[in-house]
Image (cartoon, rainbow, N blue to C red; front, side, top):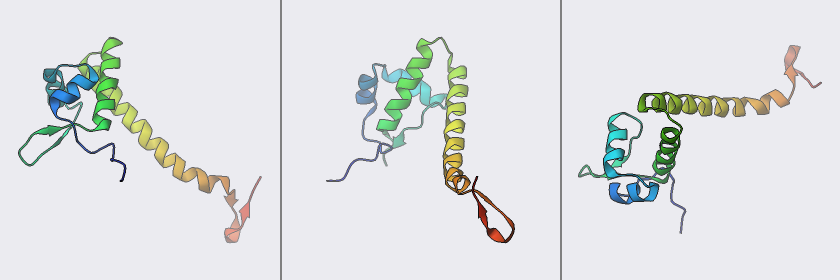
Length: 110
C-alpha cells in the first residue's frame, strides 16, 4: 500500500473544520480571501488535504497572534517565497561545495 500524498484532497469541509477546530464558514472565508485553495471534485465539492490542514493551523496561529486576514496573507506569501528561495539555494549548495572553477574548468578547493 502506498503512502498518501499530503497535497491530495481527501477531507470534506465539515471534517476538515473539525480536525483544525474551526467552523466551516471560516474555511470558506479563507478560501474567498485567497488564503487557501482546496481541491474540488467534479461536482464542485471542496476536498482538503493534509497540507491544507497544516495551512489552516498556521492561519489559526497567526490569528491568535493578533494578525488580521490581510496580514496573514502577507505572512503566508513571504513564507512561501522564503521556502522557494531556500529550495533554490539548496540546489546550488552542492555545486558551491565543490570549489570554484578556474581557467580550463579546473576546480580549486580552499
